[in-house]
Structure formats: structure tokens, C-alpha cells
Image (cartoon, rainbow, N blue to C red):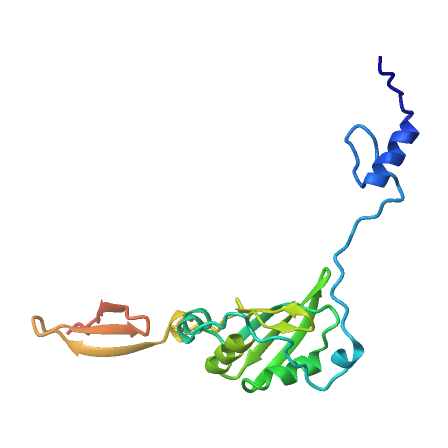
Length: 196
């Protein structure tokens, strides 16, 4: 006959913390801390530089056709930056691809992202082609177009201006006034003729 030994709750908690698992029937040890993903360690000689250098180029560079279809604005967002990345060296890296109008780096939780605005769309496409999927400070960068795209002129609300012309209708002898607006609408009004 096999004799089974009953465990006390304290003994089972000790075994669970040793195994690294918690059962739903018992509470986990309060000494157990949640694991937070820390960024890869970067030596100071790579961080304290005038201009960052890529660790690795993109593993599969995007084609020109892909960039033309994806990038339609001179504004890009750089995702997956190292939490300790600085604006000045990153701006100098981006200046290799064109005239950088503005660059900002912001933090979101444990990661950083950057917003860069170039002078032209072609410069933004060159930046995306060179940086999308590349490694900078041991982290892979993802480059996407910004949602803050410039609005085309056709979609801007048109200011309504009007011009008034007076002409006589060929079918009648009464003069009529036509008002035309820039939105393409025209209104005809019969002009009142002086009574004789």
C-alpha cells in the first residue's frame, strides 16, 4: 500500500514558487514580480554620438513601387526606437535622405517613436526604403507614413464668391440677372423692369 502524504498550504505555495507556476486555487507569493521587457543594452560609445549608424540594413528592402504606393506624404513615423534614443543624432541620420523640416521623438510606455517631416515626398520615400526593417541600437525600426497627410486642394472647402451679370433673354424682351458662384451653381432671377 502506498501512503500519500498530505501537504500543508504553506508547503504547496513553496513548491509553486519554485516551479514558477501558480494554481488558481492558491494565491501566488507576494514576492513574485511581473517581468517587464527591458530594451537591449547598448554601450555608451553607440549612444553618445553625433549621428547614429545603422547596426544592420533592412533584411528585405522595399521596392520603389511599394514605397510609391505607401508613402504619399512627406511625413513619416518611426516605430520601435530604443527608449534611450536622442533627437539630434536621429535627425542627422534622417538628413542623409533629404531636408528634414521637423523631427520629434516621444515615449509611449516602454518604447519610443519618432515623427519626421521631410521637404518632399521623394525624400520621405528614400528614408522609408533605407530604414524600414533596419536595426538601430539593436532594435528593428518600422517606418510608416503619418496619418497627418496634407489635404489635396480639391477637398478643401471652397469659399463662395459670386458674380452678377445682366443680359436679355433672346426669347423675351425682359432682362434677367444670373448669379454664378465658384461652386458651379447659378441662379437666375427675373430683373424687374421699370413700369412705363
